[in-house]
Length: 382
Image (cartoon, rainbow, N blue to C red):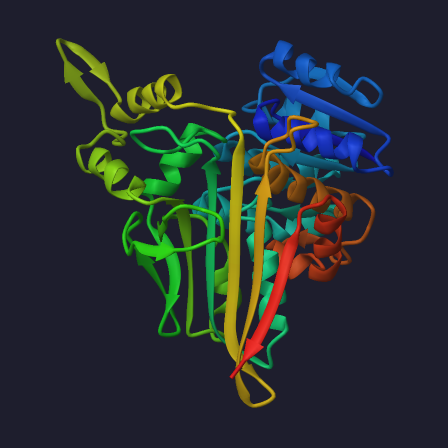
């Protein structure tokens, strides 16, 4: 199979690594970026299977031509391109998945279901870590119960050597980070879908071997799960894990307007605070240092007439030998797995659908473990 990767940043690099090094059925990979030199730099690390091209993600017609001849496309570009790229994939007859991160965009992609079915392709959005992998683990956890009551999803990317003031490092797009911190979170409360303000409802959370941690509401992580589980669960939410104290510090800057997209005038010049703040984060936060990714997906319900809990847990760390970060492994590898499942025909239905409905969870879990992403599974009852 031949796979196209759009974007040669951290996650694009991670996807190419998985396609070349972990995927024997992949015979060719094209990596495309608006910066041809970035694409070439990624391709040069995997010359046996990879070619680089220049590509403007805003050019839908060019996307159609580029996608032709590929069995699947993985979008690792900013989320706002994913609707037009989905349309391009349908026109090109190529399966498509992306790293997502925005509920409105996902809704527009899922509205393309009829066109995707007619073209005989899959469109599966939100296929990274969270949103992404955790949706499939949530589906699998609930399936292990006779009936579900609640699902709690907790995920975080953490630097191994945290530095003040935020004890955080950039491991993916700063635009994606700001978006998940300022947009409302969609959850199920008392059987209804509601919105909750992000960076609220802070809770303590513990992982063995880690210092004090916190988890708080952020947007995007539940993706399509509220609709999927509406009427089946009473409670469902997603929270981001950080080192203790991070939320209060960052929320102060949000409250001061530093993440606003409304222009302000300073000394006769107009600025967008969010753009300036994003640039300052890129300039001042560490990036690409050794990292950990923590995941906990917990479903509570009934089994054999008794209260029962199913938990999946991941603690992943930088692959020192290949210099592939934990965030790359747990974000890009799942998207690569789904792209290959689509391309190989292991996704039986066609159309635009959430991954928790389209992807066989046991197959997906086996593919994660084959890549040494250690998913620990526990169950216990009364």
